Length: 316
Image 1 (tube, rainbow, N blue to C red):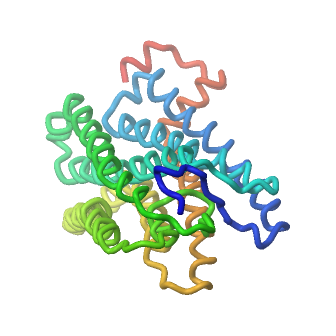
Image 2: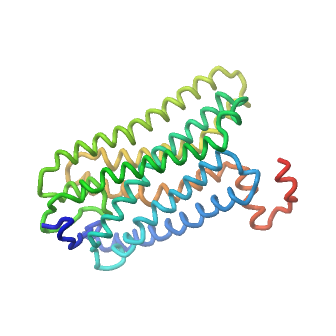
Image 3: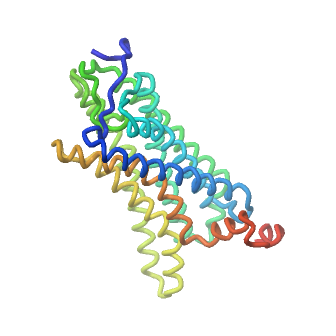
């Protein structure tokens, strides 16, 4: 048996049954990781440097970018090592750290996207009171709640997951250490852990998604009462980027964790899991910047292509 008292490590099977696919995935994952590092770092840098981006929306966006940087860095380097060569192992300590960080940051993103939905709800439905309701202190409080709750969730769930007696073959049929894969590796009774996973999924996935849908339901009702095409376009521009990110994130989460238990679904789930871990963090900054004039303008200024005076930014 392999457990916390016998830390021999694990074998991450990933896509090892198809070496040719692994080389292709290495290039895709490496490129996506570089894109994630550059794009998210740029968003954080721009949000800090330019006063015009010192608003709640960009505060939460830079927080999401920082989260995505940490999220991908917690699993992609190990994934690249496994995809490139024959070595597929990960130590017990490495698996434990990866599981803890992956759980914590995944939960943080669920809560943070809910907070951002609330921000968009106030922006559309209470525009005259937006500055009063979404003030800087509240932004810091909401962001802190997201990080602290996710840290507590990870502290509660990680030790029981690593406490099982694991099967002697030590093979995890995945490319990273996460709860459901480790439960499948256990040779003991996992009823408690499965119940714990289901409860935490309801609290930190289903409940936040329900709140997001409720926020957008209220936004849709408010927009439908407006008889102005300009106002409709403005509301759509305010919410479209966040709604796209929510769709990408939750569709990949649902595809990974609601797969039926059969070999075909398991193989397909790996690709959805890969998109969840690598694809969404690289796409999020692109979604937010493609239609965002303020970030485009800040980027042009950073690259020296726009010579506005610093006073004009502060005045705006």
